[in-house]
Image (cartoon, rainbow over all chains, first blue to last red):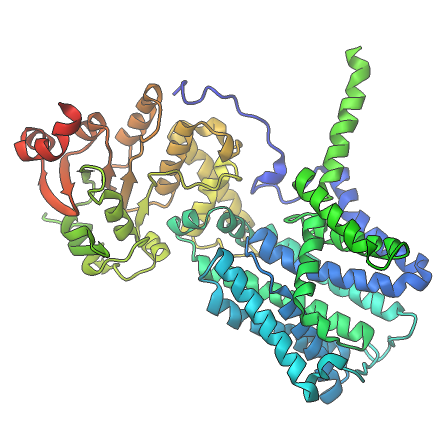
Length: 345
Length: 251
């Protein structure tokens, strides 16, 4: 026995344990949780002309969050997330034009449509993995794109869906040109989805997804219905992306064909990886940084931002395994070293 | 009392193209049985385990577990019927700690692993049980260690701990001591000798010391077919077995 146990136990961060339901310790964790929401609130009062940009960031945070559930936590390597975002956007827009311009109702319809589409396509393709699955998700999003392009009477084709009119939320809060309502609306929806996602990833269900990502064969050997679990999270992720799409349609009163493009899938993936997967907050950092870089560097040259984002992505993947959120940990390590030095001398 | 076998395999066949890996295999296991499965490399031992557990599907034959036909069931359903296994090559959740690897199996066994609300009391009980199961096989002190960082021998023990946590009726051990430095195999032998008495166990092992000490009966598998099933002493004395298998490693 002694021979097997010669290695002394090493203290592990509590975040890696089932027992730890929060990812940090004490007040530091509390500050960590409060910070992104505080920024979102403060931004509302200080943004001025940038508020609409802020709304876009919130929408993309939600979109990236949906991808984090599927790609980050469950390890479903997909490039088809735009299908759900686009479907949600078109569903919300078309519903507003043809059925009812009530935003809440339209939003729910978009969530259901995207979720159902996730359920059906997931059921068809989730028995495959790796490159096969990736190609199938690409195929699905391409088919949807081409359909939206051709069905001009329904979608407006490449002119986009115009004439979307949205009633005030609860009949009170009107969508105005300054975008206050849209911003708060997006922030509230994001907060609700965040709570759901938080609940999911810290539950036994989330733990089993983490297991499936690490080794699906092991999970089958302990009796996990892997396919069902993946289908459940894929459907949820689709519904969430559809919700982000609906926000986009409502906030801009327009749906462009680009919501269904492969590039949209690509951008959201870049955001998530930039910010860090499997953290939930990685989506926040990634989307914000992406927009910040785009906004700031576009002044230098129209396409310069792509270069900068690309460079950042490469640097992140090479040096920060956990995305930009790992910068905090790196800083902490440097800080600790700096603090220890006076004691040593 | 003449009890029915807990696991009953009849006429199990499997081909990979022209390669026959299981040729009408018949095997019965009684509750509490300790049966060794030996055979030269490529005899189809691991294939047999994969067929039993549902990681491969047989071309023909029946598998009854506790009176239920399981040959068409998915692997995960067979686990819930009481069939657990360990893997020849460690198949663990390497980014999780040791205790969680066991706890997650208990959560599946007790069917609350799909929950997202109202799970806290079960969750805690599940962690406690995981810890006590680790202590039972003498690795209680490494519960917080990340699996990736463990020495190989401890990973082998964890494979067994996970399988036992599923409370199986039939346990298939696929080379539990393979790859473990010889100085450490005695711990694995200790654990094997203390396995619950009521579980039927089929063990594949290349180390003849282990097999002959552990098994009450030995099945010799050659080219996907059962060559002989007998007590260890009779197997060791059988000239045909010596020729195809023991002869090569023992002489």
